[in-house]
Length: 163
Ligand SMILES: CC(C)(COP(=O)(O)OP(=O)(O)OC[C@H]1O[C@@H](n2cnc3c(N)ncnc32)[C@H](O)[C@@H]1OP(=O)(O)O)[C@@H](O)C(=O)NCCC(=O)NCCS
Image 1: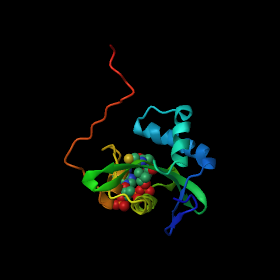
Image 2: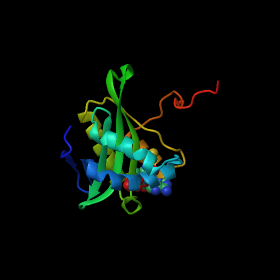
Image 3: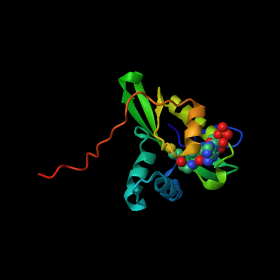
Image 4: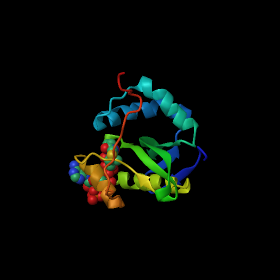
């Protein structure tokens, strides 16, 4: 995987993040996580973000640019699932700065992420969306995302039951 790799569309470009992008990414991650209701701190996240930038075997972080300006970012991580006969991917974060929204850039940005995931060998791209997030729900439905017939469950393995 090459950090210089660029995918072009008429209005938005995707480029892989470099270590030098860490601060700008953290600045955008704060409002993203606030809007998702995720408890988040730049201090705690910084090493995990830096590790993901450095290690392409984990996934990819990229920036969206329009007219040479950073307008957003995404985070995708790789999994491996026999249901998908190989690598699958989870789009854990996708964000456009407020001035960049509502102009169709989201659709183009998502399509670029799909291209990247496909190019990296992923057979499926998963994501989660809050049902009240109308623009995102609409974006994903238009792009062909469907609800699987199973409920997604999570357990925080950092928490151990008291003995
Ligand atoms: C989600 C996000 C990436 C979408 O990007 P965007 O550029 O605004 O998306 P688009 O302009 O392609 O519009 C998406 C669709 O939602 C529609 N939409 C926009 N605002 C809407 C609203 N308030 N209610 C219903 N639909 C709405 C648009 O009309 C468009 O549908 P259309 O193509 O049929 O016209 C962007 O809004 C964002 O970054 N939001 C904050 C972070 C976030 O929520 N990320 C997703 C977490 S799952």
